[in-house]
Image (cartoon, one colour):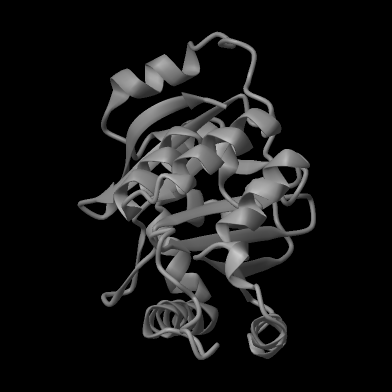
Length: 242
């Protein structure tokens, strides 16, 4: 039995898995520019956070750094609402790998209309709260890496077969670049980035759009399994033609 078949053995919705395994290449994939335009149109409409969650589930290639390493998404899997321990839930979690390293990426998204700055150029309570949430679960995960990967089910348990290093990076997506419209805000934003741990990145939605336009970090996976975490196991929600 191959590693990939072992990974799938845990899932219980076999109809979707059969659809995945027998799926022929679909229509020509959307370009990064097309995906960027779709995301920008959504963000400009001031959507609720749930609408953004749905967009990324439908277009997981848009998730930040999903193709950071040249082997792409490990197991073709993206997990929506993956819990970490008892107190934390990520909006998205996935692994990308090469022959030297497996990188776990956990993403927190906030409603695009939430402001990062107050009128006095200090950070809003919404931003401070969101950042602290990411800092808290990133801190727990960095110190409990082996426990954390268990939440990936077999995708985590089979890590030892083909990697030499396991790392984690946490990403908060919030706000628009247009808020960086004063020198004080730009300097504060730059200082904030330098003060955060190297394992945490904060980016605006415009940065995601920009990276899509450049087709940076986009995975080459042909199909992607978007999963949820239920009853201590991964459950496939949909099969996406990437």
